[in-house]
Length: 413
Image (cartoon, rainbow, N blue to C red; front, top):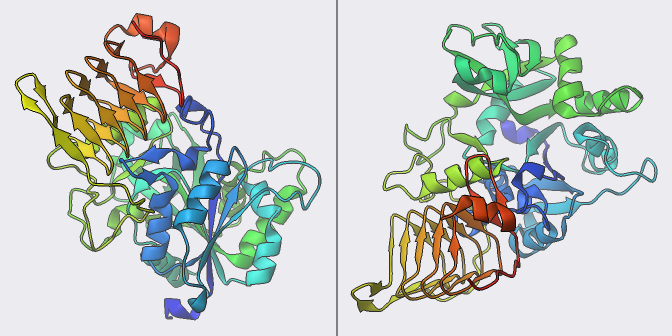
């Protein structure tokens, strides 16, 4: 049966606090966190949806959503002539004067959207992972199997599976159980070295979703969570099947990138995923014109590198440099520079993520750091050199990454 015969609604859950990403989530929700020089985390799932032809999308927001709302309003304007849209839906308190109690409750409180749009299928996806996925292939698999819900599963090494929600499925893909961080994870059918980890991406029959969240809302003992409550309910009812993300084929994607998916939910994971982009041959390739990563490009001037006077030479090596950046006599290595960053003379930036409108002062040194927007690093300052001293001033991750909050005023040394 043709996919085009079905009315499919995309529903993106974008209300996460992202506490492990503090201070980057101090003033913004996790899906609004910048990534890769010019994107926001939510751009990746939205790019996957619209590239796959799913262009009716609601984004459910809650926590510190202004930055996300503004980004979506400026960026994601699809053609109304064709009935396409990406719209934000805040917590509307339709069921009482309270915020969303969990991801399932977020959908329950917005069941009016399903009533208005009357979809056959609802694609419920998370908003804060880095990956490419042709979602139409998952949709086709869901239709062909006749499942009530299809869960995207990513194969992970069996020795690492205890850190994930694990899907236990039979050879036909029917899910037998869903296990949260099991000590003895079940292997994938026919592959004892790997297990299916849930990506938190679901394809629902609309009626099944409506009934499940309504039943869950009546259960006072429920945490009202999609992965913790709704999925186990449908697994028990025999309604759930797995879709193997490892078999997803994206146009223009090389074999090394197949199955790439990163949860950047901690400072260390965010930093590592950012550093991966700076290698000469990164696993995740930003430069795939056949499956573009979409975002709004502000009219900044091109990046500029000035001065070539011995030690005072403006250069960036193995780095990503966005528009509006000026590297003025400083050196950048293995770093991501977002828009309107300025690197002044004799300064050094290494293994770092520098977000918008940051000024690195003359002679300053920044290593293994994440510096949020609108920070001025004074001349001669050092960040990431003496981590013990950095802990007195900034946030330092378990892996030793120094994170400086948005707008922080740093005292001169």
